[in-house]
Image (cartoon, helix red, strand yellow):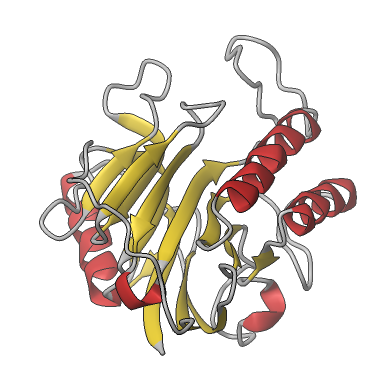
Amino acid sequence: MSELRVGTWNVQYGRGIEKNQRRLDLITSQAAELWVLTETHDDLDLSATHWAIHSDQRYSATGGRWTTIWTSLPLIERLATSDPRRCVAARLDAGDAGEVVVYGTVLPWNGDVGPDKDSPAKGWEEFPRVVPGQGREWLTLRERFPEATLIVAGDLNQDLGGRHYYGTKACRALLNTELAKANLKCLTTTDRFDADVLQHPPIDHVCAAAGQGRYFTTAVHGWNNVVDGARLSDHGGVLVTFSTQAPSARFAPTVNHPAI
C-alpha cells in the first residue's frame, strides 16, 4: 500500500508577492506530490520542491497560465493536448503507486468567450463545445495507458454531488457523462466534505480512474479562499490522498529529467 497526495486550486491570477508567499506556505504545508494550479502565474513558484509543466501562455498576460502541473514525481513524458493554452498533460512515475497520467484543465465558465477573447460573452455556450473534445482526450489516455492511474484535475467550473452553487443541470450532466466514458470518478464531490469545511461547494475537482490491476481508497481535504484573514483567491482548494494497492509486479518505465 502506498500514498499519493494530489491537490488542485484556482489561485486567481497567482500575483502579488505577499499573497503568493501565503499561497506557497499553504501549498507547502499540504506536502502533496502533485499539484494542478489553475488561473496561475509563473510568479507563484514551487520550484524549490516541484517541477513545473506549464500550459501555453495565457493570451497577452506575460507569465500567466491557465494551468500548471507542479510535481515532485519523476517525469516520464509530457503528453500533447488539443488545447495547449487551456490544458496540460504528463505521464509520471509515482514509484510504488505506479504510473500516473495527469491531465490539468480549466473548463469553460459562465460568460467564457472562448478562443476569441473579443467576442461577446456567451453564457454557458462554450462548455458543451469544449467538454466533449476533452472527454475524448481523457478516454484516449485511458486506453493508451491502461496500467496508469488517470487523474483529471483543475477548475471544472461545476459543483457535483450535493447542493448547487455554480453551474447548470445540463453542464453537470455532460461533464458526468464524459467522465464516466473514461471510467473517471470525481473524488471531490460536495457530499464528501463535512458541511463546515468549505464556504461553497467546490468547483475545483480531482477525478481519477485506477490503473489496470490496481485500486485505491481516498480521503479529501479542503480549504476556503480566505485563510487566516487573507483573501488568497476567489476559490477554495481541494486535496485528495490516494492509498493505492499495487499489483504484484509492475513494469519499471524509463524516466527522463523533466522539462519545463
